[in-house]
Amino acid sequence: MNIHAVRAIYLSEMSRTRRTLFQSIVSPVVTTSLYFVVFGAAIGSRIEQIDNIDYGSYIVPGLIMLMVLTQSTTNAAFGIYFPRFLGTVYELLSAPISSTEAVLGYVGAAATKSIILGLIILGTAALFVPVEIAHPVWMLVFLVLTAVSFSLLGFIIGIWADGFERLQFIPLLIITPLAFLGGTFYSIDMLPPFWQTVTLFNPVVYLISGFRWSFYETTDVGVAASLAMILVFLAVGLAVVAWIFRTGYRLRT
Image (cartoon, rainbow, N blue to C red; front, side, top):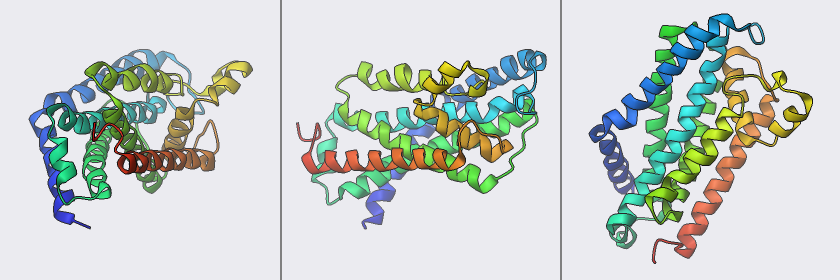
């Protein structure tokens, strides 16, 4: 393992975050804070408790997961797309760096940014609503696994995309709607039976439900099913990335 190469890619990507601090950290935190102000403090006080949890507190895990899903994907996608766009990816491919080391650098940096952002949002939420974490270790496990899995997805999107429009297509038009419809703001038990069944085909439901369980021990689906879904995401992402480097898909053309 070429640790120096992994470290160089990782630090390069992290330095890009420092250069774009407002866009990478400040903007998502401000946006999420507005959710807490509007849904937690203003509207949440007029909504009944869900599973004996105040509404403002109930939506905290969902909002954190929403931001982690979108930011992990976007950060990793931009991280690998720009070297392709500028043509510097050929320097990476010709360097004595294995595909595993390159993925560790790019995906590790994207996941780190998202985890830091998730923890900042968690701290910000505590300023607006009461937050309890029943299982802090499992909370970190769900947070890290989700950030890594969706950073892998973003890495794949960054290689697949041939323009800035495609780069934003999946995060904005697929992941964000799935998160909004996946229980970020409500429990799927509040839906009519038909839509409860339909919602179970939304994979994001399992991620949000598992993460919320680590806070309040309440779930829409089983914790084991949530953990299994995250591991499926992770396994599929690793398999696709391995195929990309084995075939050179969109890297050598």
